[in-house]
Picture 1 (cartoon, rainbow, N blue to C red):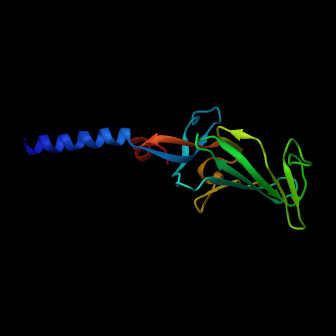
Picture 2 (picture 1 turned 45 degrees about the vertical axis):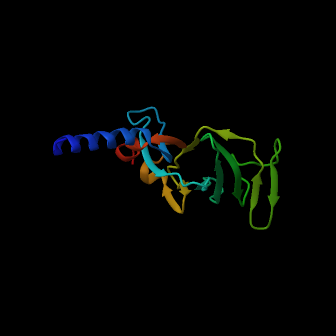
Picture 3 (picture 1 turned 90 degrees about the horizontal axis):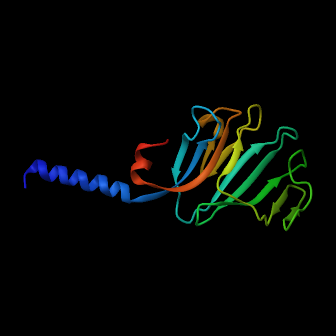
Length: 170
């Protein structure tokens, strides 16, 4: 076999392997109904055993920090695990519902035991003070830095080919 044939065969094998090897990723994808709909604006590999995503933001009325913690399931759905805040305000939980459990201290209010599952975490990126961020694997990404303030994104987890991981998205 010639040297060119060997190189061509090796390239073909690499291309095939890149399309049959898959990786799990955590992504931020644009869901605004505009020309960027579906664009992946942030992507990182999902780390085996690291199954939580934190979303941090500042409440527009109380101007206090909010933490939402989510758990990644084996089927790539995402459960809300708990929420922390230190002051009641509009659009925050104000009393237990369904089976949620409340832990109230002098420093924080923790709401947990949710029974809510998402295909993706919906986030409208705060345009004034919310400063939404996603924290995963020790890296905090400010969503206004990857897409526009006021924009609508989803944080999702999925399995993609190595080719897509290397050549598409951010």
